[in-house]
Image (tube, one colour):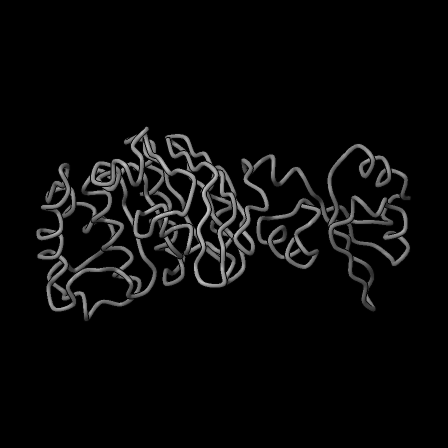
Amino acid sequence: MLNVTNVNKQLGDFRLNNINLTLEDGYIMGLIGANGSGKTSLIRLLCGLTKSDSGSIAFDNLHSELNEDSYKQNIGYVASGRDHGFFDKMSLDKNAHFFGKFYNEYDHQTFLQYAKDLELNINKDVFDCSDSELIRFEFAFAMSHNARLLILDEPNGSFDDKLNRKFAHILRKYINEHMACAIIATHITEELDNIADYITMINNGNIVFSKDIETLLDNYFIIKGDRIIRHKYDKQDIIFCESNEYGTTVFIKNNERTRTCSKSFADGAVKIIRPAIEDILFYVIKGGYNHA
């Protein structure tokens, strides 16, 4: 289990403020937020690449700083782009052999199987790999040393639909079989609809919400109708509202008051839509975060 407790970190003009998170074994958390919101800064702390100013990060009671070596044995970090730390002029196979020596539970045959499953040419040099190949390599390597906390930074950005489905299947299978857990930081939120158990949103270094996905999706709904509908709801329930020549869209909290109000409209006067994660991210940003 991952426990992040009251973590603060000053990074130049940016600050992570009083971060609290819990993620139990067997679950996947999606980490969402606009660019510059603090996702990467938080990931670096979770990976032990930087140290917090205060607070604590622990996995299975191993503190990220007090038990640094043991803590990092459990971490499988899949970086975005070229921020990977492997040797450019060395093949994927040789990189796995070399870096696998630093992990007590690394198994090269396991790596070879995951590499095959993820359609990798293990004799290809890192420098010659596409972004998609690098992400798949890092993913295969992380699983081959039995990482129990997988931290994936924008893993889906370079995948086509086929690879996205394969990635999701392999990740979920690994999480279930190893009683591991995973954090996926991404801006492609539609991928999280199908794989995440929890969603955490961060903005300007602050956690906006951290909820299981079903509760989150049930917390809001979207109302579409004519301009008058915005005046029917209590202002404290409206997170965002916009009108144009085609009508009005209201993103609103789902509670007894708003449900009762919605039932008062004539049949066909409004359209009520359950939001996707992408909708929630979009409208909470538009609404200024304060009412989420």
